[in-house]
Length: 134
Image 1 (cartoon, rainbow, N blue to C red):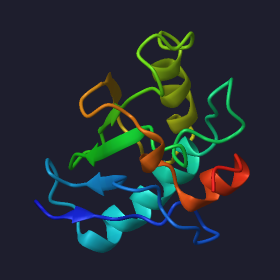
Image 2 (image 1 turned 180 degrees about the vertical axis):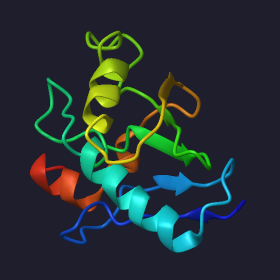
Image 3 (image 1 turned 135 degrees about the vertical axis):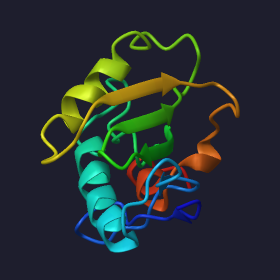
């Protein structure tokens, strides 16, 4: 399946962060199964917070892509608010640990990417509201 599927941020049906997608680029999972699994992945990712900002990394727009393979191995492309972020070395492990609770998940790889660079425009409306950025 090559189509990118936008995933609701969590079970409360909040709006997803801009550009955040779960894909099945390396998967032939049925779309319903990919969507359901994607929702579980996003819910787990939303438990990870930037230690300096009281908003989860998904709503901050730090997750660029979540790719799910047939065997439910997961590859995540994510960024940081700044390349010199003090938790740069810890953040991939924090994401992997959060995803470990998702039933049926396979291996998890977290790639740090800095292109395109993160900007506040990637934040969800919820995150902007939380941070009084209107």
